[in-house]
Length: 382
Image (cartoon, rainbow, N blue to C red; front, side, top):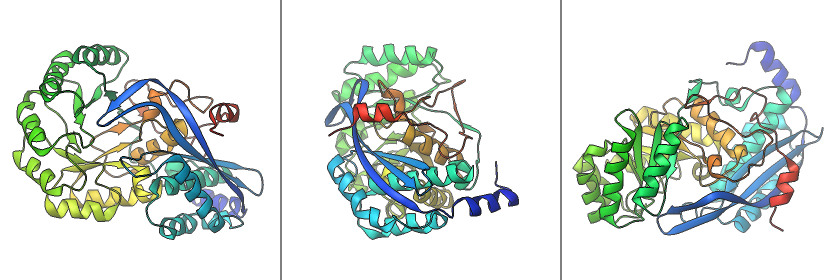
């Protein structure tokens, strides 16, 4: 849906209000079960919510998560960064929301998660004031729905197989294997056996989270050809572009950059080195939905693939913005990873839900979800 001329006038008149206050709220959210990733076992999601209140009482919400191995951000640092940026926004008019978000991007180095949560909250707030959805504020939907993936990260091959079969029966058609955790022979066996279990029609990819050295990564991609992986994500260290280049030369599996991408300059550097076929686009890495759209446009121009993803594990607050980007971005041929699916309890009254194997574009006002502030208080870290 696009915004009509009359609606644009409504947007202009509805956002002549100002920002009253900004709060950073750390929370610890329980997962349904621990998630194993290379070098880390995650049992709770250490997230930070950003709550922006307008002078008329309207509230917008954003969210990011602690990601020390990806962005270097911890919850306490995210809170400090939001508090540092808040004076740039308080008492400013919402009509300048795009300029305010851009100002935050350039006001301090790094801290993409804090900036992302602020941008999400601004878009949510403006959308609620103007009666527009976040996807419309990002330029409109390019697609009505996106197919999500389910992460498989269990300690054993048999556990991965059992979970893959269960989730296939629940409607999932896209799966991502967490590799770089088990012994290499088991990782290869898992990929091949999961492909046999799921059949040819399911989509399968793998994510090493920098867990392989180059020799192991080369052996993996050479021996998993029959698994027909859509891509292998960040097999080696983020800074090892020559290693990524060497894996590209093997040619068996497309290579996806994740931890190595914090914005457009990194995309250009990887592309110059022919070090990847595409990227994992995470809002917390690049600084928010608007910055993500700019990176997506660059990828389209360079002919690169994109998967849009959250970090383990964000609530439906962040998932709604991630879904909006996945629907609005010009090229999302590697699917969507929404991580609220792994939480034992969400922070919104009606969590985003999959239907017929896809997530539909959210068309409500703002980010389209209603935050349950009693749950926020329950999981708040004091």
